[in-house]
Image 1 (cartoon, rainbow, N blue to C red):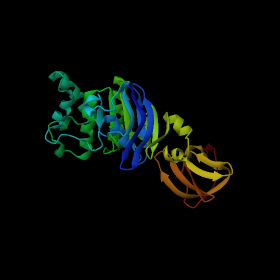
Image 2: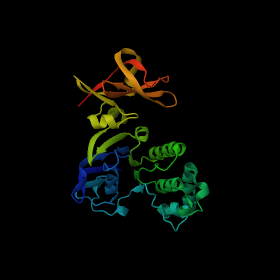
Image 3: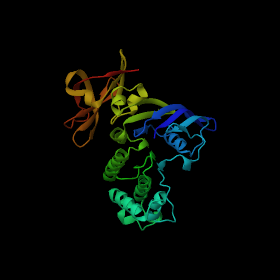
Image 4: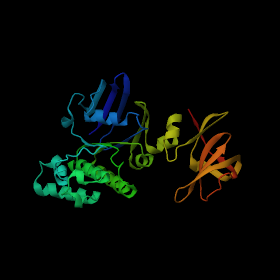
Length: 309
């Protein structure tokens, strides 16, 4: 199913949480909504789900106007950041509810498969109060996955998982999404997660969509300084000279060659390389290096850049 928003606005009091948002998510697409805290990401997802009543515009699912439909009539599954599990039901019962219309053996097969892949098989007899935050989040994710809806709405579904669990769960979400051609809208502030999962990304700030494109398009050609300095891990360094604002990716800086001179201000170990912070003309440039440099060391460097609008 496709999901389309047409000039959608949502106000809280006099403040616009969403302002004239228009976008279309194609059937089977993995679409990530990325932005800083307070940018409107969750409000956008809740509006699509029907949990927030929009003030202007239309929401269409598979071409049908669902703007006035209650959540239960929109044929979607949503994974909340705050889990939203039924406290008086076991994990198994929580997972059974979305698929209670299926035969028992079919239901058990689906629950067994998803539980095993998310590492919660041993938790099925427990109640939510007996689970850690990370375990609750995996159960919330499993409950959406067992339903196999045509549209998934996911709000920071992996935020409480540790690094290995995040990678495993991320892989599982993508596998199930691809296997079943599920249209997925996924909210995150995690750059790596967005780039790993998305077919396309929408960058949102202050309730407005700033740029939509593939991860590669946005990474290579940010439309303005906000996107350039926000998107990427690390984001672009922005410096100013006679050409205007220049955006520089860390991988486009060559240390030890060129006529530019700077001073190493900080060094971070990134496993297979180091991220170097260079002070240059009272500005800062980030660069990757294969070896650790000394803080305070003066270095020569060169760089490629993009002019930022």
